[in-house]
Image 1 (tube, rainbow, N blue to C red):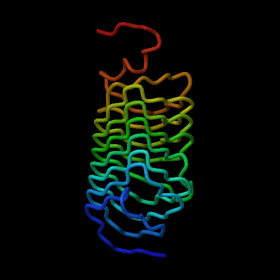
Image 2 (cartoon, rainbow, N blue to C red; image 1 turned 180 degrees about the vertical axis):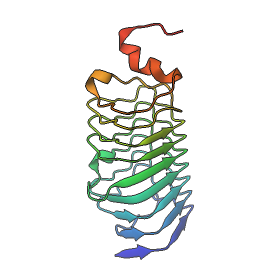
Image 3 (tube, one colour; image 1 turned 90 degrees about the vertical axis):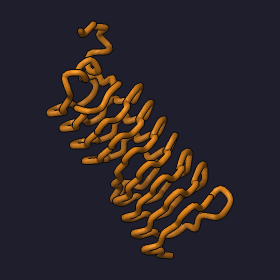
Length: 187
């Protein structure tokens, strides 16, 4: 079933059924998806604004040009989404404890997001932008961070030896996040 150009506002999907379908150019505002199954849906050119998608199950779902603004996405396992055409953007979102394991998310924009303890292990973030994001205890292991812009983000700890950092951009204040493991005092 194809659902196009529809506005969904103030719906609580923990109380009503979310119809499995292909959603194109739809907008979800102030909706609650907390902990529900969004398995095998196709979301294309959709916007989620001020929604709670924490702990929702996105297994085998397609997220193509999906924008999340002011959303709560705590503990979402993005690695379970389909790879084909996966592209997302986040602004003012809480992505704490979310997982992007092995996710190819080149040129992804994270703006003013809480990314504490988010797992980017083996992800490809080439040319992504982390603008004013809190990356405290975020996990970067064998992650491709080439040409990633971290200049305005903070609290990250990234080991240069186990991640690809060629042409990544950091502010002077953020250099400490590259030297954490060495116990060096920077003043």
